[in-house]
Length: 179
Ligand SMILES: [Cu+2]
Image 1 (cartoon, rainbow, N blue to C red):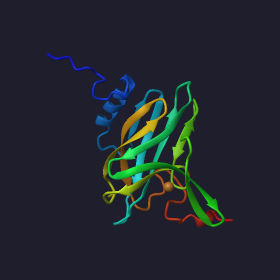
Image 2 (spheres, rainbow, N blue to C red):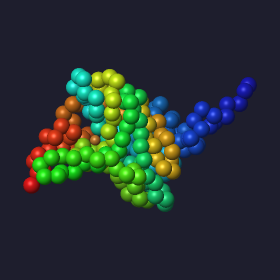
Image 3 (cartoon, protein in one colour):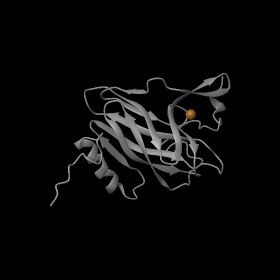
């Protein structure tokens, strides 16, 4: 028998990253899904169903750093998107503004960082297909130290604010926050 080198196919993933892959395989059809990458716990990556013809969608996730070293979410990808950026969102007057987050999102030891509608988010650009509710779409999250982590983004309802609670979406419907 040929021995299969454990890291040959996923050179950027260590043993703990492979454990994350096992979690992907066992996540099955559960509504929520989680991954582990080193000391990072990655909760329920999700996106929203898009109207036909839409070229952009937001990506959301919760990441908890259970370790003692800071890490940083620096990027990601979606198989159906041409490219992905990390964006912040803020109100400027009564207009919701998105801007790239320089240097990524820091995740301090013991901290939970939430990307959610109305706040920091991943922006999937140049969508090749319509995102349909109920789909699971392969992608990645890229961390400065934990490296590239394969995940699946669950596509929620087009009206979803968040699986738990959330605020405004990309549709500028959040004008209730204007001053
Ligand atoms: Cu954005």
